[in-house]
Image (tube, rainbow, N blue to C red; front, top):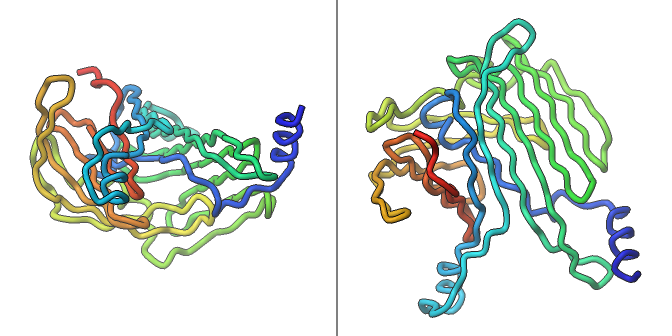
Length: 270
């Protein structure tokens, strides 16, 4: 009965966005090579306890386990926006988090989903985002026009609010086209040394400047098979991130901030 009462009280309490450990939505590959039809790929979100314990204890740990705390799935399918043929980049993620409430540690599961609807050339037509944290929901809907974009945001603390048409600080062509403009062509051709691109913050609707560049070749063994490819460094969040793209065109691992990483769960078809 006590646990049920705590859970009910927690559900009625308003969560603060700054206290949430957000699920990781990653489209690093599409930023690198552009958007193409892709079957479902599933990644695990892990805590790198080896590095964490090394940093905290100042010595290599003898026993450790990299704990899986969430998931990411990405697929790209053909879609229609009105009569416009396009691609739907569908990324869904989950994450477990412990929240302290009334002196108790309660575990919640956060779920997020983000869609980008883009032309085959990589221009964003519209996008959406939803975060569900213990029944409390944040959403964003954005539509891109020739010279402006508009956003509708919903949050538990501020309700629904609409913004737009918005004239961004950068040219609209740059906002709409930069994210999915390829920097790399498989298996090993660099098209650009570095690129700057913009993605909307799903909680404010404002463009966030990011950049990516090659950081050298990589090689790794997975399932007894050695894979090679290219490492890329992404700048724009709290810390730099590193994505390892194989010559086959899939991401083996994405090193995130705070001892977190994503790792693909099984080899993609083909």
